[in-house]
Length: 125
Image (cartoon, rainbow, N blue to C red; front, side, top):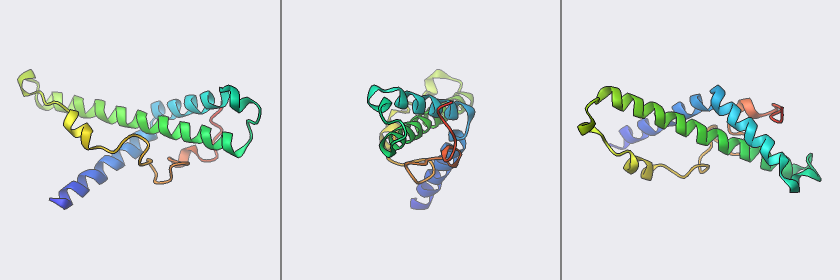
């Protein structure tokens, strides 16, 4: 049973990594990065380490949330295809309750540079 659970967790993680590289997730990351820099307290020292770290973390969190949303949408589509009868509908809430909170586990392991595509990329464009 543990092997099945670890395989499912690994599959989910790999799916999130792949979806985190999608254009939608990258766009959300860029928006969050720019929004963080637009905050009034970041305007004085936009090149400071703290400002860079906050913007990068905001981008990583937005990217992770978007990937999780895309995965949930896709799983719901697959479930609907497999069980078109509304009587077979399953509430996904119990599965959500078992997932770790957003931001607890980054897509690439390192929370600051969640996905390699974000490191060294000017997200403020």
